[in-house]
Image 1 (cartoon, rainbow, N blue to C red):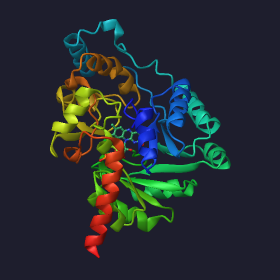
Image 2: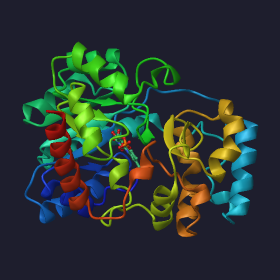
Image 3: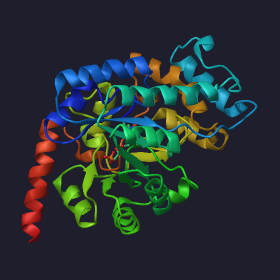
Length: 344
Ligand SMILES: Cc1cc2nc3c(=O)[nH]c(=O)nc-3n(C[C@H](O)[C@H](O)[C@H](O)COP(=O)(O)O)c2cc1C
């Protein structure tokens, strides 16, 4: 979970509890990654993963549309952010070359630090990159939201596929076809992907406890990936206001929106989403919109204002508890075993 949630303490606690902790490093600089990996290694000698975002194809747009500028300016005024601190009115300056270069540098850190498992979302790395990572013996985990993507990942040589159902919190991993047509629920998606690829499948989306794990395994998954269940944990780096929103939301609180970043993502609906959603057709694509809203999200964090933070969370967030990461892992496994026994 990129954006500071997967603090080294959380990653290490999950790995120490016997699961595979993952550092969401998508927004980190190579230096920040090195530091976080060093810290994780000081806290655990168990395997862990690093997750990155495969860069988007270049989209050339002349200017940010007027309704978006107006809405962001009004939010900046409300948060008392100086206008010049905003990302400005034009995104034509977005440097796609630097963006690609930075992904290559992030991957180099994974290789140099000998991270045992590399997971990714938003696409498929180049054949050269996959070759390099595999040559180093790094296990590759890719993210698919429908069967075709899973087949593309398998053909590219990926070792394990995450089947990300539409219940999942955070950004949709969709990279082939239209995202809105790819909102397939976990219960439909997992058996379909399991039937169409020969590599192991990890189910993700709406799994919060051992019941979800048992269901996913019955559907053909060989593992489960939990995000939302760890958000409110003690070791999570999520802002307190974010944790409070997760702990008080219900199953109708989230929606999939492009308003924060330009890429569809599931989060708890708040003032920002309500204000921008009517103008969604004018929102520029990821990562341009993500850059444009960064100062707003940062100011909201400083002011502990959940109305303007991106509160990424899955549909089952209501099952979250304020506890430790080790307790989440232990209870998932215990309950999974109980459920399997009961079904015999
Ligand atoms: C706050 C948050 C941030 C996330 N960031 C990432 C990410 O950086 N990379 C990624 O592959 N998936 C990311 N995800 C998606 C998770 O990997 C996973 O698909 C999802 O959390 C599973 O569904 P759940 O939230 O219902 O457990 C994120 C999810 C959340 C809730």
